[in-house]
Length: 119
Figure (cartoon, helix red, strand yellow):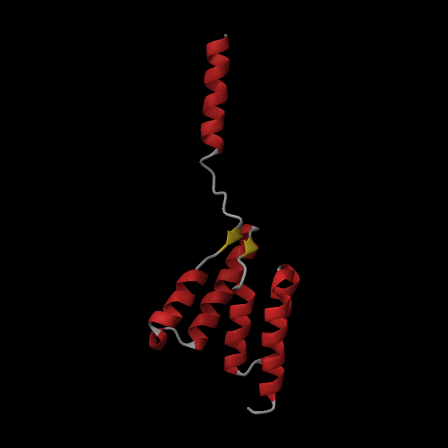
């Protein structure tokens, strides 16, 4: 009896450690950021936006939280494309989800607003 109970306990522990324990949904975000630095010609702004928007839908469908920096990066891409409203929306979303990024995001928002009149 004790042996079978012990075996059941061990197998339960082993199986419970097999699940996906990632805290955030990363999607293609990491590879997009890496590629935007290593191969910038192949990762233009519109490609990044479309890939990240797909990741956003996938994350919501799976019920997972978006990774830190995701909304900020998407906001930067919208700003580069001239879509200031969407950029600000993404920056505010990043700030709401990750309050520790407030100083960085506030600086990004200020730069976007300052550059808005220059376009």
